[in-house]
Image 1 (cartoon, one colour):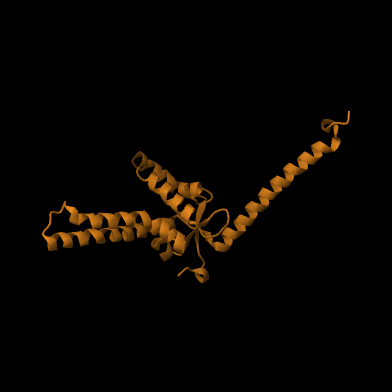
Image 2 (cartoon, rainbow, N blue to C red):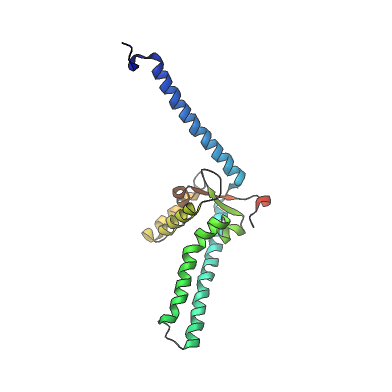
Length: 188
């Protein structure tokens, strides 16, 4: 019989193809690690927490500004505080909420809190800046974790940073990581 099943080299060829595929994946992982290391060192949990707190303060201030404007509008117009005069402030607050994180992450590679601490969000697999889709995906996954299970999932998400890679659960899901940028590469 001279069929393919009798070919003594066929098994060796299949093993070689599997090994080559394995080696290719290993090289891709090594290249990704090299690209990430060029972008910066993994961000420490304390730096990420501090950046998050700075972002909360900034975000809150940005959302309170429209509320303050609403109060002025209501006072000037003598309108009811539940009436249509409050709509612009609500809309502005919603826009700030929806765009603060994903737009700043895509445009500058970080939120203002991360920029203040020289942190940057990068594509985990390429070590490159995040695409708009990854930026939005990261935000949406993170935003969904906040209300789920009364914050338990949110807590687990952030405790995940303490694991070996230093990536939060929302980083893993979106294929991103946060690095600390060396002083010479600090983004503007």
